[in-house]
Amino acid sequence: MPVPSFVMAIAGGTGAGKTTVARELTTGVDSVTLVPLDNYYRDRSGQPLEERREVNYDHPDAFDWPLVREQVSALCEGRTVEMPQYDFTVHNREEERVTVDPGDVLVVEGILALHDDVVAEMLDLKLYVETDADVRILRRIRRDVVDRGRDLEGVMDQYLSTVKPMHERFVRPTKKEADLIIPEGANDRAVDLLRDRVLGVVEEGEPPEPFSE
Ligand SMILES: Nc1ncnc2c1ncn2[C@@H]1O[C@H](COP(=O)(O)OP(=O)(O)O)[C@@H](O)[C@H]1O
Ligand SMILES: Nc1ccn([C@@H]2O[C@H](COP(=O)(O)O)[C@@H](O)[C@H]2O)c(=O)n1
Image 1 (cartoon, rainbow, N blue to C red):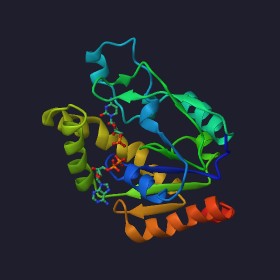
Image 2: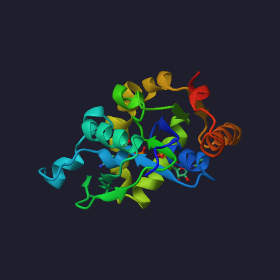
Image 3: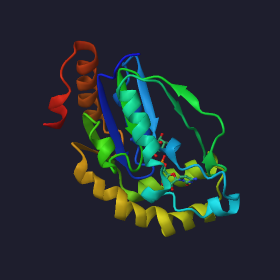
Image 4: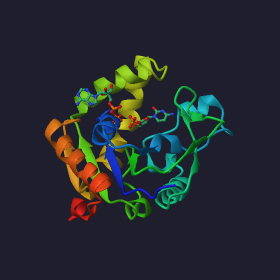
């Protein structure tokens, strides 16, 4: 298995465009390993669905950080992991894990991708995608209703009770940890420049250090 040429994290608020930026930045790279932090929500099989619906999923405590650290570290060392998968419709991990191999580029992506100090030590590049809150909530309403089986009233309640306050308390402050802030989602110029650097590291063997200097 290859040891990744470099490892990046993409943080930002819900609906900011993190997944889109991850895809754009790695276009042309042969082997990319995505580590979506959503897969690392804690296992709540011991809790009834009614309770799971009420959990604050935007607080750092909702995530299984020991497992995040263990698996990111393993992938960085060129080892395969059995990655958990998450089912948003039932607010829980799926029973089956998926075998994930390390690629040339490793991308840790999620609202709190820049939250954990131990994970931060493993990163060559830290990005924060910044998109206005009104754009993000509109994107989220569409996604949660269409893809995640939620109703509009519930999405609005969750946004005001936990998503927004936790964004202000835990997500937005991680912006200061970022090497680069990408404005307005998949900003073409910023993404083009970064993609060239990613390809330079992977294809030409350039050192990843200038990203963070
Ligand atoms: N720059 C952009 N312009 C328009 N739509 C975008 C842009 N970036 C992302 N989107 C759309 O917004 C939604 C959320 O994007 P996504 O990348 O999944 O966000 P996140 O991973 O931060 O939650 C998706 O439907 C995506 O297609
Ligand atoms: N059971 C869950 C778990 C998480 N969420 C929300 O997902 C958001 C993070 O995912 P993004 O793709 O939007 O970054 C986060 O804001 C949680 O509120 C959920 O609704 N239900």
